[in-house]
Image 1 (tube, rainbow, N blue to C red):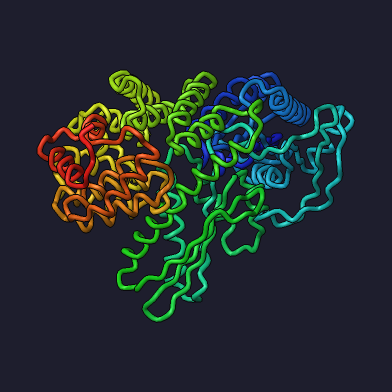
Image 2 (image 1 turned 45 degrees about the horizontal axis):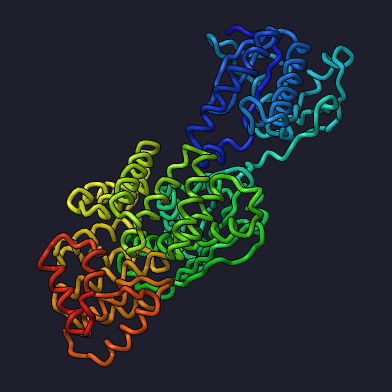
Length: 584
């Protein structure tokens, strides 16, 4: 067994698990870059040798403690200075442990207490800091210009005797900055942590169920590529701990925290969940779900789907509110995009024009923001279906170009393929829209608009039986959706096609209660009333619609609607004639 005395440096990336959960590819790319551009040149310069890489950990051997400590100081200084200047692979921080000790040589690898103690000291170091053993300190003090702080004797994990340790005050550098990711100020994406749900039942099998619900929610939310979701390992680190949600938000660097609890009684289970704005501690949403516990996995899937479907629209609204409350001169691309979405949902001619301007401005600031292209498709789509487009043909062409850009920028984004489906639908290419919408659902089964798109395409093709399940799925998946008026009006039209005028009127009236004006909500109710012979009610509703849309008539509906199935459209228009609408 070969042994030798060596100075061992062990370094570890701070918050590696959290960073990987937020941006796996980007974190690996930055870590490789900082190794290549900063760490490896310094190690070589000071005669060191990397003998092991373990994920984010780097183990280095030096023949000289002075070389090892000098390398560690210059390493930390370079990282801090680069972060302060905003140059190079920034937003990374390291902890470094140093020890001088006897090691066992195993080929290229080194083993033994000399290595173990260095690794334990690394865990004791502060962020951007260096912690070294007394043996290393004795060799370095007086030979290196550095300020050492005596930490006393430390109890180190799996080390029999306490180890006296010292830290190095990097007085020649800038003070270490907060290394929490600067998501709120600079990221395009909002961020959320799903905490492990609390088991209030005291039964061990419910502990597994509670963890399963939390894990499924994390997985489902992660399919939304506009949302940065903290990985399970980071959020589950808080399991069993009573920590303030605002503090958790700060530690994980997230805007939003989802918390919940599970309580079982007999064969019933109650699940409560709440969505919190981490900075303000304001509750954005809360809900309680009571279920019969027959098939535990079916209940787990059902509740997960319900929670994800409920909170995704609430996050949309919260992001829009955040963006619209900021001063215009200090907006990043994401915030400009969200202002566009705020205008989009108002759906007036002026607001849709403003939405387009915001999406174009976001793209001028960040040409890679796929969602802004999807937003453009939305605005162009609504201008056509609401009859507000000056040139519907031009809108359709522009929508198709924008959708292609969205897919090209992010081919794995369900929203991009959904945008392509919208562009096809507004261009009356309903059959061609179906593959894109199905792919969107494969990428994100919870994407309500993709389910709606399949239903809408079926309605416009005259296939009511095929449409209804998709439209019901959209409503079930996202009960708080800002598109809900569209979901309901298409379902009303599907029932109109089936000659079920009672349900057509019922769903049309529900659509009329949703946000914003949409002429099709009035027209489907009017068609149902016409076939039902309720002409007096139809007359009142027609007058109400005319106040918003003076050109509302049979010919306007014929021109603006997206039906390509002639018998289905004619049946629709005949109902309007029976309701007393003029031809035009």
